[in-house]
Length: 195
Image 1 (cartoon, helix red, strand yellow):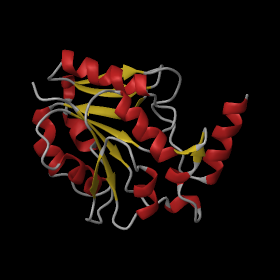
Image 2 (cartoon, rainbow, N blue to C red):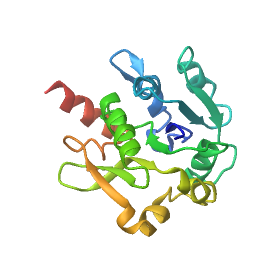
Image 3 (cartoon, helix red, strand yellow):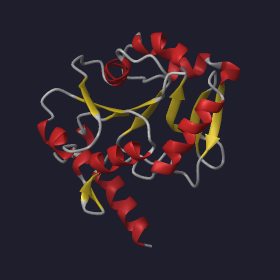
């Protein structure tokens, strides 16, 4: 069986951050991007990080980690990142978003492990009350569909068509939905962490 690869999607432009780069915001003394890539590495499978062209500072934040970096050079948003992330892969893929700091190394390891036990299932992380979120593990036979995606809707079309193959995996709290896109999101999340 071909090993799962974690594909960390990190090519977005942080356009809602009003001049700041959300993936370079610090958490516990390191940029979010490095923290998330480090967590992915701890899951024990190959890790590929998708960056956009000319994201030199993000690339520098990843120096020294045992990861592969690829670039999404097309301009059609999330689909371009996914296509770049899965190019040339043959096994299952765990698509993870780099701006979700509540997702832990243990969450990623759990999804990879469960995917190995149910190799035909699409596993989608969810909140504890069952709302679907991220990351999402796709079996190898989904790679052609992922490689054909267009636009900024991500892999929603594949998930919608998956039917009974799609299984929700509840993670603790609401962490499958916590992404930080604006300065206000960051401020609220940091305040909640201190409580």
